[in-house]
Image (spheres, rainbow, N blue to C red):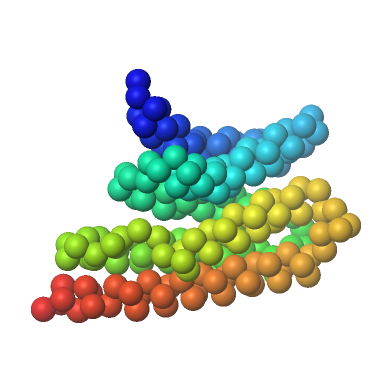
Length: 204
């Protein structure tokens, strides 16, 4: 096996590992919510979530460092990001809703989940239109920034829900969630503006 082929396999495996890792988080978090003992179960779910989030950082760094950026990687990365959101956000909403008196936070997380998932569907639609006209469908800076901040915030929300540490107050969680929702809205605008010429062509 050539060095380039091995590097490609390594980068792609790292990207695709985001999916099983976040699914392990879902299983561990849900099981722990019904049976919170042993204590290591929540920690294992948290570690799976963090590792899933970290793959987004390291696959891109490795791809650039090893010079193995491919079209497959450019498309697989946002796909696995979508799976991360699709799995983690409803799980967090489920866990928050199980806490008595957390009605406001449930509404915030519901808003968070709906806006994020709607944005992903909209961007996928725009990319499919753009690909018909030879557009560059790679993620732009707004999508990368949303992911770079959104993934840690999701990890932090789970940490708060399970452990409620004194150094991570609820107001901080609300602020972080509001920032990411704002970035999500900016990303919708940026992608819409970028792909508007192709959308107009498709309407003719």
